[in-house]
Length: 425
Image 1 (cartoon, rainbow, N blue to C red):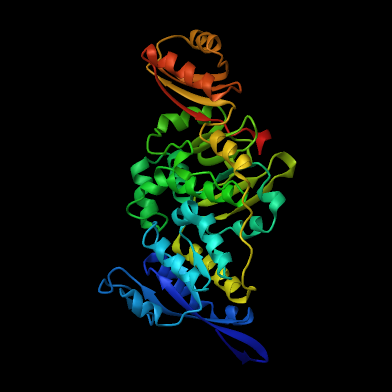
Image 2 (image 1 turned 90 degrees about the horizontal axis):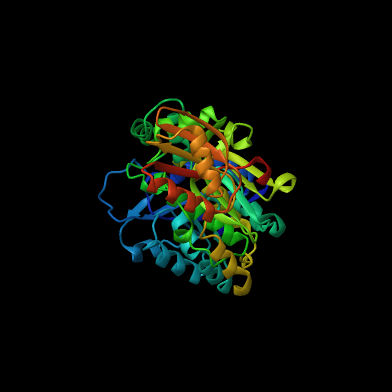
């Protein structure tokens, strides 16, 4: 990394090597060019010099970046910072590990990689006197990761609740306005919020990986994204959202975790009361609460799109270029503390529940009596014909599961989601 002088200010010349040159990689290259003046004011002059791609013959927008599918050619360019935007686990993990082992800082937006191997890669970086930056892997347009990494009390506050996937939030927002799931998804792809293959967003996997990264920041390195209870948004029906509205709520795709002794986790749709702050955000906006009640730290901002991700990636590149080497890895709790938390987070936390019933021929009073007998009393219920929606009193997940099994044994079709309670965030 060389240093020149511009208008009396020392400017570091930073050579960026990209791993991947798809939508986000090309957005990074564009952002480097359009933000050159602002970057000079921050003391850096960035240059995207090379990108490693799977197929260097595939048409891409015109760019001065050298494209190669040969990793040896890529390595010979002598880069100062690596930006990984390949996505997926391999070959990203191997290439990132090789860069860190060579002492080169790495910036990544790859939440799958960071969720699965973040602690190990950070340890590798520390061992070789360099750093791994991954601000864009969680809430791409919201500076929460680096903030929480520097604040151990805030990051380890024991409760997380958020809308952390912009694509699924856009879809559910549009469905609330009357559009079908399929129509809203097509629109999300057209706007660049979602990839044509959007299963990671609609299944909740993307949100689970982001929640896992946040839990790792708090030291819970034993948490595995695939073990968090999760449900996608594909089964949501317009009448589910209509019943929620009649109960003064809205359905939002959320990620929840509480590491307390009666805690648990959930990734997927949830009933959000209209009085809750999360009910007011729309579209691709992300929002995250870390902590409980009045002590919670709140983050909010845009959460989808290549341009948003690219801007956050470049902020990390600047930090990587100017930071002292050997930045300390996030703390990891001892197994005796981390294992029990990981076990608790395999089950949804206790709380109120939102249920929808289809083919319910019994009266509302009989349904309420049935639920009360199964330790899941209803506190509000609406319905029309054989469809009903209801919110229950707080109850453990075991009580919910038992009552749902009993209802379904009578021929009722039941769907359920947690209620995001105002006083728990």
